[in-house]
Length: 454
Image 1 (cartoon, rainbow, N blue to C red):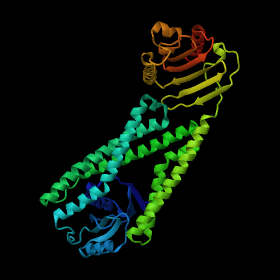
Image 2 (cartoon, helix red, strand yellow; image 1 turned 90 degrees about the vertical axis):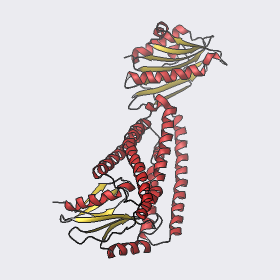
Image 3 (cartoon, rainbow, N blue to C red; image 1 turned 60 degrees about the horizontal axis):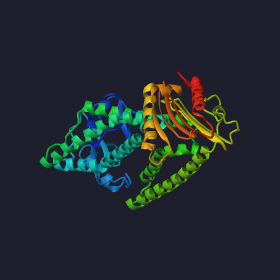
Image 4 (cartoon, rainbow, N blue to C red; image 1 turned 45 degrees about the horizontal axis):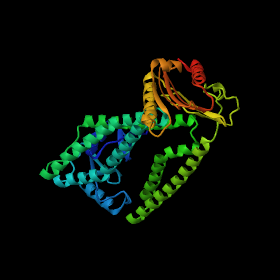
């Protein structure tokens, strides 16, 4: 039995509006009549298959803060109905009318090409310029974030899935933006030369809209997947709310939309409601961020059990006194499934171990290169430090059980910092203590590799 209604995702542009006339006619022939126009979807109701002619247009007088059934909209619809068009559905400025295919052709609503082109150009500047500029700004900020994190971006599930999601999203988005720019230039030329409004290729328009919608869904799924995996890794619950800020914005926006659309108010009243709701949301989000920050700080003080994760200990380095403090951080991501750190200290010394084991050797080498360069930069030429920076030769690295490495040694033998790579396993080690000789430290590290080696 045929369903009584159906929804289709729609993520077209101003330039795609005229292609909807053909699409709505095609759906009517298949037994689906457009019933409701949404922001990202269209709803159809089941009818007997029939031939219909559609007219899609903008009413520029209505703004986002106007009651949709105001006098301007009613007058415009009456004018179109007097011209032979039956009103079907509307979403603010966007109006859809239809007529039977076998009926006399209705009178054209727009008789001046330049005026019609200017209406669409204004709508394009008003409703598409800001979202495009905002997405460009967000893309630039994300690119800067990934650039600053470098290979460390692969240590976070959220950043990994954001990279995947936005990479997929950019396919549909750049195609859409490119079309909008080209269409705008053509429409501007039409307004100048009094030519008919340019129309998009129907098949390409459908393919582009479907691609953009699919890319947007994949991007959204990736955001949820990254947050979910991070949550499984022990991310504080309050911190999750920060990542759902965009959803809270959507929820507030829908509430504002409902307030504007369901009760007749003037434009200023609706603007005041929107400003108050957004300000209240911002205050609530700031409070949530404060709670999340406190939970993160508290989580940093929580010590987990080391369990079966190999790490250097004071005992392995010959310090017999029990640790006074110990702390474990268990992290990990889909790209670096094994990632943890362990630190313990007492009055005789301290030792810190951080272990990375990425999914492939290329990632391991990338992380090694980043951390080795950081260490080299921090101790560049030994200026201001009573330490000696050494790039280990293969023979020297083998003494520590590694294939390659970078080390910083204090001449008195009390401090050692090492970054060692063997296969897919990367170790970052920091050792401090009286009477810990290089031979004992090297033996302890070799024993550690015995449990962590490939």
